Image (cartoon, rainbow, N blue to C red; front, side):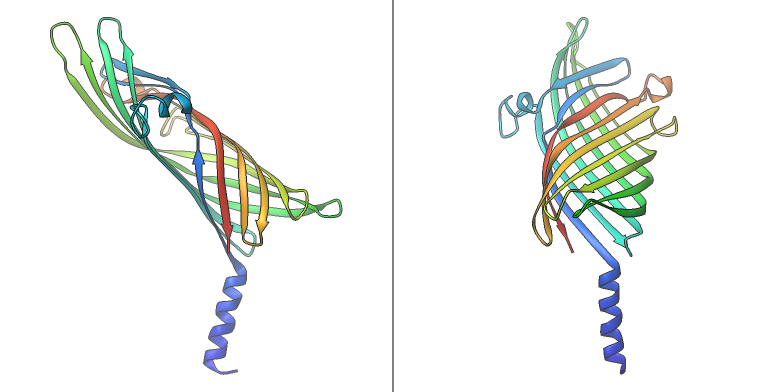
Length: 251
């Protein structure tokens, strides 16, 4: 065997051992959250319909929303996945003696190594796969407030980032070659970044092609961060949740 054929064989073996998934998706996010700093807070409580219906392209509620999932697994055992979300949210609320308008931007990224414990056959054509997850969740939150008091109207801007450790599990249940259910959940924070964070996702998949699967389901991510009790720290607590639809390409 010459060097060229050895290189081709090695490349083919690597392509067999290493598998990738790329999945752009839409998360029709509803937001229930409180965000604040320096004694001022803004309450966001809006469904996806509320946010896109408040005027403009996405309205004053949601201006931008970008989502994507990528993962790789080696020899069907060791893997790495990442979920990336970015959203720009606006809100207008009334405070005790002032009107409070604000705009918040949220960047959320999960970077999670995982270990596949195995895949077991169920029935004639079904199987179940179990993954253990342990990684980090990266947050970046920015809040801009305009507070309209009777005598003056100060503007307040605050941006902060933090990293939460997270642990969780994922289960994929294939009924046959076409249909499947995917469940994922986890917890984290533990007072290291935020006080507590959690996530839960449930998806139904339909494989329409050897390398393509349509998914639809529901996803929720919760957070509680009090800023360590410091008045000038950005506080953020609440949940993002809503239907999710996307397509996963495997190669």
